[in-house]
Length: 221
Image 1 (spheres, rainbow, N blue to C red):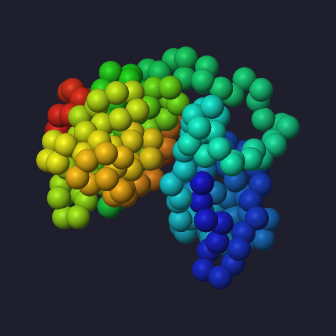
Image 2: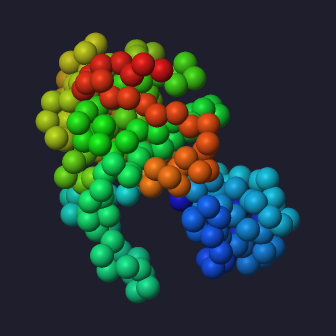
């Protein structure tokens, strides 16, 4: 998801009907600029080279989302595929969670996330943690520094993790501290996206894979 504004101009997007590297191309009604949807970047037209501001979003099962946000409503999209559900991930070896921090791009395979749902790593000198919630088939990226303390996490249950520094218990989905010394604090979320590995590597050719040695261990970055 992106903020659909460049400078002072609010843009209206639609599907162009074209593909770049087998991925959807968007166009804006106002200028006809063509945009790569995985990059949010103008590739041809008036806004070529400009990048839309990304927003933190979730790709999660409706059941888990409804538990977390019971007052949510649904945007009805009748042209959407009816089989767009958990079976999207029936071949996890082809799916990755990709992200960029300070110009550096990384991805983690879904297979690794399933094996190690909590992964501590450091990218561009920024301590991060990737979490994977199996029931919701959803991954998140958080900063793991809170109140000046860099935390190291290990998984407790399918829905919680604990930091080694204060033994605070944290919710995997929200990044909220729910029990312990830091209760009430929240990890800062960062933008990440679930994608086909081929698509991610096509648009991020310099991206590197992040390994998952074990739950609660530092990523070798």
